Image (cartoon, rainbow, N blue to C red; front, side, top):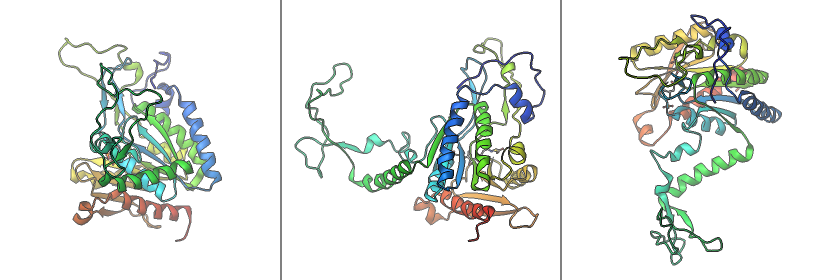
Length: 360
Ligand code: 9Z3
């Protein structure tokens, strides 16, 4: 998705409110089709009486040129979002997974090309081997001289491929869950790249989800840029070097949590994430976000400790006081490969039920 330059007749504000943002920055092409897909998905999930969660995941980019060669990016592999989506699905939620293109996705994340490439645990059975014994493939067919890859005739028997024994149990577990979700039709995926696409999609999907009232949860784990370059200020072509250093002044991305809470989806259960690298700032910043936007939960995480420690900041019960509670994995749990998202989702599911008004 990419944007063209909006009419220069529209005055460009010096700071952007959400309203000013959406009236000056163009929606991405394809937005309507994405929203129609979400609407159909929600129609089916509402008919089935399911709770629904929008999970945002991965980093947003800020292009520096209209014909984009360079862009600014926000750190996030998409692990938090993809892992959390799986636990929401396991808890019976329908999930709209709105993620940065090519970032990790539920289920396939277990076989990421960089950490666990699936080709490394596939074996080729030769015609002489039995199902329990495999050996390196000794090509029975002529190879394509350019690629050295075996070439098969349409009626020729292709050797079977199987999974290394030590990896089978894990793969079976992931595959079974994945197939069950596919069969139930409870996962819908939407992609973004730029912060502009993210903002337009978030607003449009929130409007659709607002019809689900309190049954909708928002789990905003995407790493969203605080700054952007309005299309009106962007260079059309690649910024040329040769003039010394590059100075770019960016505008602040509007704080969309405010209109989200007040206007787009007033009944939704909204969970945002706060990322900091200075541990001293984590709790104060998370508290500040909750005070400012008035949503349900801020989950604070330190960049380096996020896999085993997060802090929930919220107003529990009817008390107006903001409280924080830490959620930590102990050493044993980390060693056993437990994922902190399991506990995060379990806690949120309880809180969401209470929000809906279900006594447990
Ligand atoms: C997070 O804090 C996520 O937990 C991470 C996940 C980005 C750290 P990974 O995908 O990382 O597992 O590699 N996301 C929210 C970050 C963010 O942009 N928050 C805004 C802020 O901190 C508020 S919405 O100001």
